[in-house]
Length: 540
Picture 1 (tube, rainbow, N blue to C red):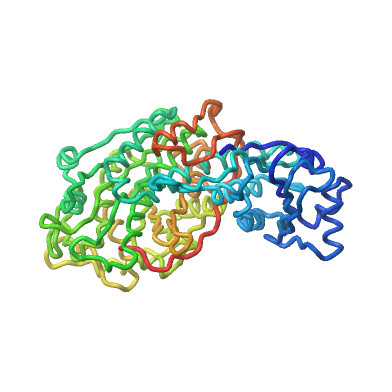
Picture 2 (tube, rainbow, N blue to C red):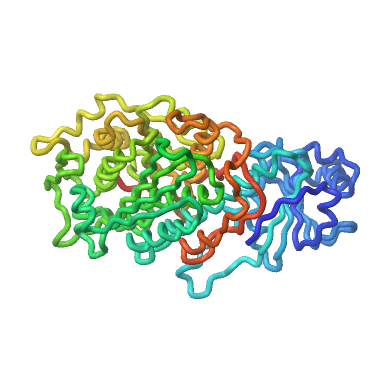
């Protein structure tokens, strides 16, 4: 499906030929003299319509309106949050039969963040998973036009929102795939597909290379599965040559049974989402390849399965990590931190300006924060502030959690340098303290996305988070012009290098199909929809 931005007044939008015209309205929308504004004023006066976010009034074959169907939609104050809520409320309208072209009209003066919120909410509404369905029900909608009065900031906002949509949809696509359709090897091929975008290169390390690197913790997790592990290395070189890169590390457990410490059977199917961190790294690189910001980024993904078998690692086993530190594996279901610790050690060779890992790490984080905010742990206040600001800008929020030294006491072991778990209390914090032992003095942050990476229940599926947060963080680094100083996510003037040739074909190649809308015009301070909490905690 194509997204397009057009500079249209409400009068011009009424003349646009389409199957569905959605008119986002505020109290100010009734003050115009055109037919749609008069209609809004009349409906408000009669008490048939309210402008509260998500309120609706459907109409059909209106005189002087080219669209067959018209839907007045309240947008509250017109803020990004209200617009997101309004567009989410009419999600079913985008998938209605016979709607091939729709126009989403802002019947008020809007700004970039609100437009970006509409783009992301519409993309979320239109996403459909199809890969493993024999007869997928595809929506008929092929084109969605965003119509707004001319405004200099809207085209840049639209471009960033488009790139974020493509990144989130790529992440969502891979996270939604069943584990037999998203093995470590398949994830590696998706990364190779991204290398077709400008400025991106990819290197894949197999079992032999990982053994040579001495990644004993990573290999221990993988040894119970017949699927060979993959260590994926992506580079985006958009900044100055030699400038310290931002390094992002994604947990890529393509299926987590818990290993010998087997999980309960209920909802274990959702453990295909345990590679949500890895999926977000892929999504980030998709967006970077389109926008071409002036920043250097390295992406690392440790991908494997965690399964029980005669060769699986056992509780009580001691393994040696790449750093040389030994770990007593007290619980094989606390495997994410084992694959991440070796990836974090590997990351040191790039002398990163900042090191950020992303992982569906602990059920404790779901209990603490639910499905609204990701957990943020950081050793650097400036980095933490930058990530929080980026999350707020993207409406992909996080919340900073503590890293007091005392929380690490529970990791002591009589038989190794540390254990891999420290009991139930403050589980998300002690997991972060484990990872902290492998980052040295590097400016480091850990995002625990166990509560935000996917939803359960009737709306089960990946959310594509935290691609928005990561993308806006990277754009903020570009705006500072220095990779060594984390920047807060303020409005960004332009998309750095030329973006005319950004092709969504790379996303299709990486995903094995087309997961997202075709990019059209320009860039944004975007807004990812708020997510509902899942019905049960995630894995450790």
